[in-house]
Image (tube, each protein chain N blue to C red):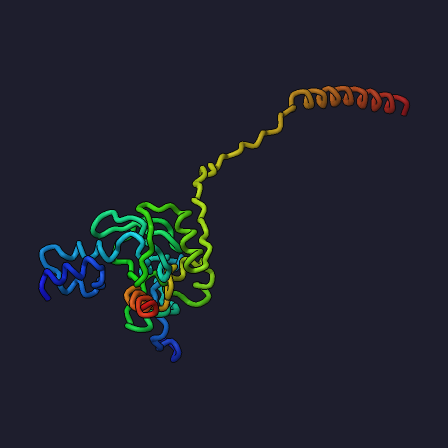
Length: 167
Length: 87
């Protein structure tokens, strides 16, 4: 196939990605990739945790990366992780999430869900709580006890001496 | 001399130093082999080796990759299958 005929086919976006690799010459591969993954092209993700989900090309970043949105998260993706399908929807460049929700509901009857962004809170800091020690009251108690002991002893002694004297 | 059932190689031999200082031989169970792709036979990444009781205690996300056919097919074979199904 001549280059002129190939160029004509590229304009219509007919050549699939697998054939494009066989005819790579003079940097034509990038042009082919960009034309097959044009804005509005329906694709399926083949890699990652979003794989086997439908998405639509929203914006072309460069020859190898594209922004997608749909049943997947809205993100920049390598073209090698996408498989293009036959459908191409009419979308403006940088279509919003709401536009794509409307499109998917109209075409497939699916309501797209929004994932809430995770809020990273502060890590709980483990603080050592020092236990308050009970206040000691030894001095007064011992003094009282000593006083009591002192009081008791002479009385006992006096009682003993009195008892002895009577006897 | 080891007993007859201890000559089996289904258990691995481990030399252990006891608190007394001597070195003694003990027998421990072997881990199961690594999981393989059901189509191409390549070893699966992200799937840990362990007895079923150990794996059951792990969180679900640590047992296999979180993607379609995770833990069954390798990444290459899963991509091929997704493309085949949708073409």
